[in-house]
Length: 139
Image (cartoon, rainbow, N blue to C red; front, top):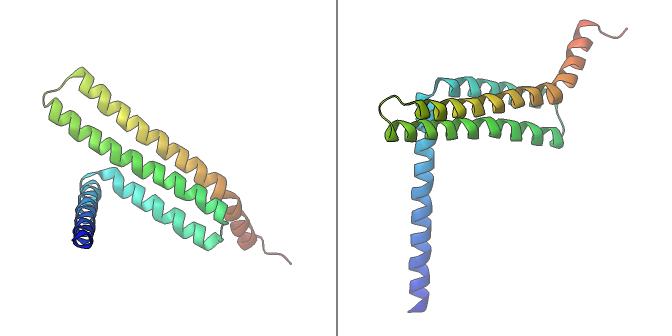
């Protein structure tokens, strides 16, 4: 029956998607468990989100914060994957393996720097206004 084939295809589709999400979450958990900088990224992500909520930033500003945070996390995840592949391909120390790992780390540094700059540009002015209003209340 054609409808039965459709149901089987649909079940297979959802089963493979569930498996794919499982792999993705396994990778996510690996990064959080093994990468020291992931805790730093998590802390700064939390700070940015809390400040954004407290400062009641606009949707457009939220978009900038989300993109900056995503850039950092993606670069950290890709750098972790790159390091694992380099270690697999070159268990012994090699100049090119070091270059690959160093360039991956540099990508994370660039993303983190851009994220800090974005945070300062987006969150800095309203944060400064709140701090100034607290320290120098209007008469």
